[in-house]
Image (cartoon, rainbow, N blue to C red; front, side):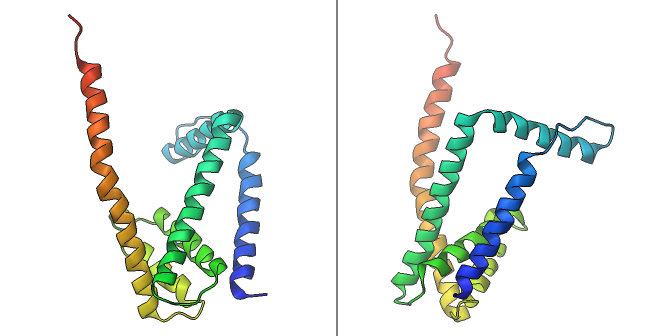
Length: 169
């Protein structure tokens, strides 16, 4: 087996173990400790999501769809440079880069996303230069979506908000 398949399998096992642990979290009581209250509120809100099957299936489907699109973005960036890297490797690089969003030192995970992506691509034999070029292509493609769709969404949402605030005569 390849290195990417083994790492992906280990991450899948860790994900499934975490999913089982989260599924059986009991309702936690509210106490005077501020940190405990945040954990308890998070766990108790999870019960509301868990009981709403329609929303849960939509969230799982949406996250799966976004993960596949992120992996395809990495794969297309690799193909744009003319490199030969298996799709499973780019799948793993995309997965590891998604974890960098939890550790946000700078806005948009600048630096952590790039370092995680370059490192995960270098594990599969790509040079740091190729990894950095792939990350730059991925960043530019992400910015393209944000800068083209962002103003459109802002316009539509501002029109909806202004329509709601109008007082009828």
